[in-house]
Image: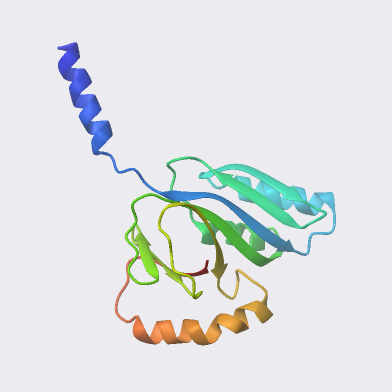
Length: 171
């Protein structure tokens, strides 16, 4: 009986999907001027259940965030927490661990979300890769302006109802 239970549990564990995921992110937080600012931002980000650790460096204005293994990560929620703390975002650079994703041209899906690479580099879907998120609230306005024509072109090609989010990244 114990052996049968062990076999069943093992099969269930093996049947669970092994999810590739974001392992960490560095966010340039604009407007930090004191330790109370950095502490407030850190405390705001720590409220997210998928966050393992947060370190905010007041000298560089960079928040380094690591994530819990196996938890889905929502970059947009982290960015929202920075804004909720009273600051803005200058850049979001995430490290994503590719396992078995299929890259279709310059895009790939993770769950219901789609990631579109805007740079000219091909996506190598293996191991850890850094990507810069491209969106008006994820970077300085002057940097976003450089990508806006590409984003507009992609939006014209991608039509229809989407259940997930479309993220633009540069790798």
